[in-house]
Image (cartoon, rainbow, N blue to C red):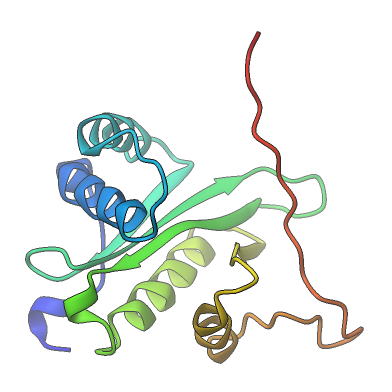
Length: 157
């Protein structure tokens, strides 16, 4: 990493670049995307509010993490969730993801979040190893239980 790779808090002015990365992320893994234009509009709105922030690295931006903070009855300050994290393929292995994650946890802590969560697909063993190195184990150290996040898509009628 060099000076151009310093992790920083994104601003709404970064919405288009982050949207391009999010779209590329979904295309890389054959997931649907509404496209960078729609994503940029959403990001521009989200990044102006208190519940969402992004950490970016690079000039141009080559790595990013998007975090939302939600309220929770058990924790003052809520729970931060790393919604998305992506580094362009050509820049992987340089520590950019580590810089993004470290800065994201620090920003969530600064904002008062009481917990930080990350969702990882079961077959993504590389991600499991990466996050475990940063203090996010797949198994609860006290009980040995595996961590799960269950979800279903909601549709309006």
